[in-house]
Image (cartoon, rainbow, N blue to C red; front, side, top):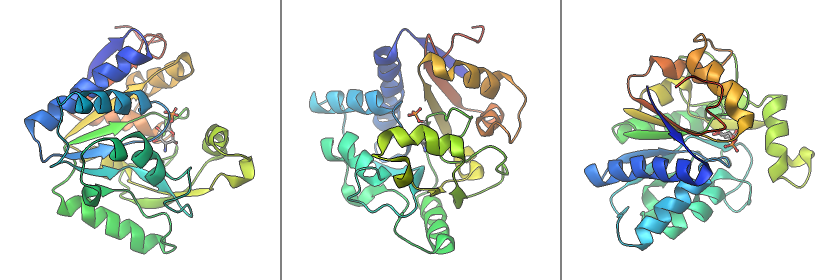
Length: 243
Ligand code: GLP
């Protein structure tokens, strides 16, 4: 694993955007695995800035997102579909037909998860997967104790994840309790993985995930077994590990 220590959030975002840019420049028709949450927003802003300057071209890129809340439609401002359009897709020249997010409105979990998994395989897999890190070590929506071998599936969100995400909703009752997510196996099949973390609130989980035992109780710990992981964190998030 390669670890880049950034001075602050802006620097973390710039370093992460540099890695994504390199991927897009080296392979213009790459498949990017994308993530939501607050952490990658600055990374997307930086990519947009470089696109506007004429330094980046997303026209041949395909994207697949990690996850989506079950039951939220595209126009719900808390859906990950909406998030991705707001923060990236509507601001760069990516072809909307080549952007993919699990369909939260498909009520049949088995149908949607199989469709999404098949889609990823039909694209030839993910070249670079961007990940944030949940407070309890979740990646995508793979909560603690998920089997490492899972592919795209429907999860019941833990109370800690529901509580953490409640800040984005008007009331806690509105936070969906289920989501579709790429599984750990799906994520591990990406050729390269880029993890972004910031803030001292993530310092403990960064240490447990990347320097503790590999265990399903910390889903991100499996990333220690991947042969091409880059972790970019600000000083606060990396404050509990020795570099
Ligand atoms: C959500 C997303 C994850 C994300 C996590 C952390 O649960 N499904 O993909 O990594 O939040 O979010 P944040 O970056 O806001 O801490």
